Image (cartoon, rainbow, N blue to C red; front, side, top):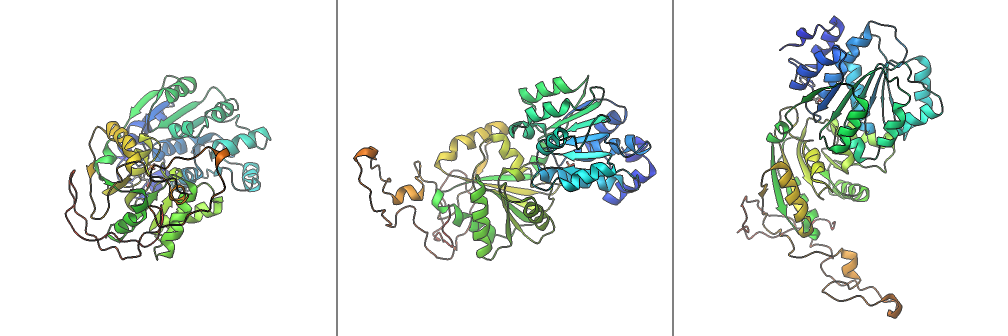
Length: 444
Ligand code: AMP
């Protein structure tokens, strides 16, 4: 199949050419004719499948030849980064059509967004909260919206946006075209689809496909050795950049700082950063200024950086689905990638859930000098306070304030030796190498 078969305008065809798209991806082949024909679409597809262009191309074609300057297409997306990415795709594909787009999200001033509404826009790409803000303060009306896209619906659900989306829906004509995309289709998404779509065409692209390009390994490790194991992996030659996931915003910021101090071109992406900082970090990571990004799950979905060669799960995510999204940041654009997951004693249940979801047993990679603890590990702070070794805590009322012990225990800083360990792939057994575990900075 070729893009020609969609009979798109010559301006759009030229833009497709400029983007370097030669043939439609499977989701584009299925969705574009349906959207052009005015159908509602329920798409089960991840990012990386070309789904943005699958809805952007027909929307641009449908809007281009008519009166401009009123919001006729609205795309709602979960994160600012994804909104920017979708907007960028619209801009590239709509060049020369005269259509105007604007992104709407929080964390930045409202002024520019309001100014854009006043000047007239055709397409809005928005996150739910700020969009609702504008609607409530009557900066904007959506009475002319013809096409609504709900993108990454499952992430919007996870982020608690469904009540906002239902409020937004009240501002949009019920006679409209609706396109809903989601990487997974649990009950709540089906319910929203039932409420918002009319007689939709269902399109599913093979969710497993991108994962086939990703080699996955699990590395058993103790909590206190994680940072050193990370350095071990960073020392290896890999193609492309590295995306590291941590559980907390603080963890992401802290780890990126430490890596930077150790001489790596590292940055972080987490929810405590200002919008400017987030954009700067993401752009720097995309254009190669930073080769390492440490992020929380805000970067797990939707973000398209085709050069990510490896994803390292420094901390496991809280759901098995989130793991799939995280590792999907590598192996993009038909490149291969690897996903390395650190597994501590307490992570074993989640690892089993991840394996069940994928229907595979992920290979265990035992690195010399790194081993998983055989029981739940206390946080270093707790150990310093003398709670390790099975000692019982007395009821508060009976305790006298104690001087904190700073003795070197499990939580103390690892030795500052250079890591010289070799990596051996071994299924289920201990490694036989004698090299020592090194430590450069003391992180958990
Ligand atoms: P998406 O799933 O929309 O995030 O797209 C993933 C990546 O695929 C983006 O970098 C797109 O620019 C790219 N892409 C979209 N459609 C095509 C196509 N037909 N051929 C090649 N690349 C494409």
